[in-house]
Amino acid sequence: MMEASILHDAEPGMTHPDTVTLAGLGQLSAQALTLGTEAFAQAMWDWLRSQIRHDRAALVTSGPAEPGYFDAHFLGFPDTAATLASWESVAHLDDVTPRLLSPPLQARRQDRRMPDLFDEKYRPLREHLERHGIEHVIAIAVPVVGEPRVMMFFLIRSTPEDRYADAELQQLESLAPLACNLFTIQRAAMLWRAPMRSAEPAVAIANAQGQLLQTSSAFMRAMWPDAPPQTNYLPPDCWQALRAGRFWPLPDGRHQLSALAIEADNWLLRVSTGSRAALLSRRERDIALRFAEGASYTRIADETGLAPATVRNHLRNVYLKLEVSHRAGLIAALDGLRQT
Image (cartoon, rainbow, N blue to C red; front, side, top):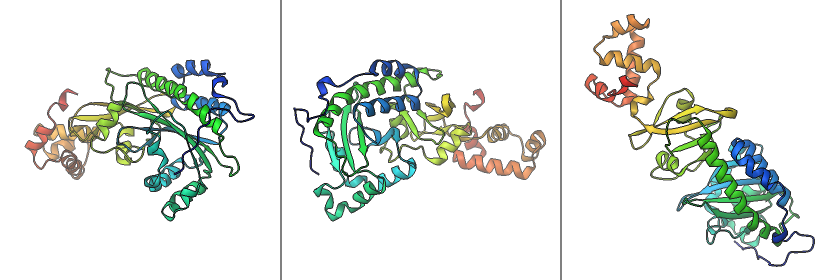
């Protein structure tokens, strides 16, 4: 697609980047240490809108050879899940996002009516942009200091005649590094402010729908060691288990994921050492331990007040979850569970 021409002289009526107003930046710096994720994201986008007028905005996090995923807040769309699903269906047609990395810190422009987009292969992308009211976009990639990641800022306008001016691209180049630094500070403050039992860096914050709001690199590697995720939502079965208070085993077989409710109906996700036994519910755990110690179906039924058939059903589920087929395998799988 066509790249925007970056002018050094501001257009009439536009604010030159060297004189851009930084009102509110000091307050944002303090808020980065005190506000929760959603409140800070809203404050940040409000400040950016006061500097560069836009209708919607998105913050995307990406790593080397990884597709970008919407890491914090995709604002202004009535149905975020539908918007993300629509984007994922056309992301392979996106030429601008990869070029944001070559080089970073350089703003790019994309307009829905750009000549390059009228090639037939781009028709699904044009339809996606039209469907979600995306007429004009300016974007920039900012490296995250000390991490192999970048944050990409997308500012969106919905009116066909309201094209971004070249000076506004220059403003974005001036402001995006500041915003990136504050988001990074807020990310760290949020993660370390949450109650934790250790300094384990493989942590993340999710909202009530299982959408990842804040992540660490160690968390992403633990959850998806082979391929990066195509969405920033946890798998539904994983999220259901975590919300029910159960652990979720990770692909390496040596670690597990747990969730702890924190402020504003958000959840702290933590990676710790564990086993497949963490998948068991409290009832399944109790029955499995009794059976492993030699109790019969009838005895377990008498001690727990359950019907023998119910005990057998629970044990069948235990065997499936632990991937064992006999009592000796069950005993091995439950090793150490009695101490937890």
